[in-house]
Image (tube, rainbow, N blue to C red; front, side, top):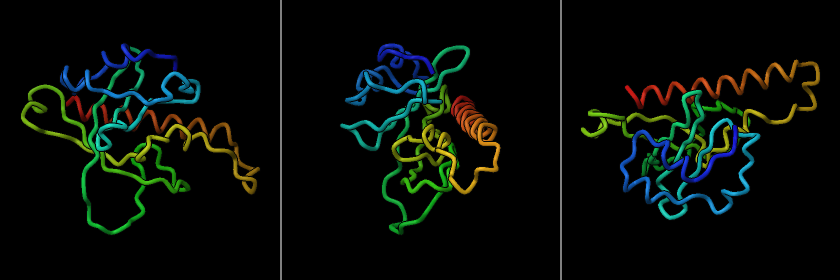
Length: 163
């Protein structure tokens, strides 16, 4: 992923109002973002913790999604799998994030949701190091397949937001 400016990211949102885009709080360490090892950029808003952002590069340009983490839940601690990275080793908390749909559907309050690692560490999860007991595996091929799957699932989620 190439480097992007805050202004480029602000212009990328397809499901947010101008006031919502203006209110975006970027991470404190945004300038030190490791773009080389990201398939998408995601973060939770420090001032509005239920709000998250997902930025994905496409050949047509960046696509940004404003997300909201659902509140509450069943009250029971459960292990769930992130729909994007599908990392079974990760001990990260996973949230149901919902995104307002684009167009008339979004104006009518329609949303779509997916389970995502709470702190958007999916890129790191699919690039994890080879376990020592798995030396016989074709690790570069496995890693490439994981990265490709992550990107496919992000694109699918974006298409659901757009439809």
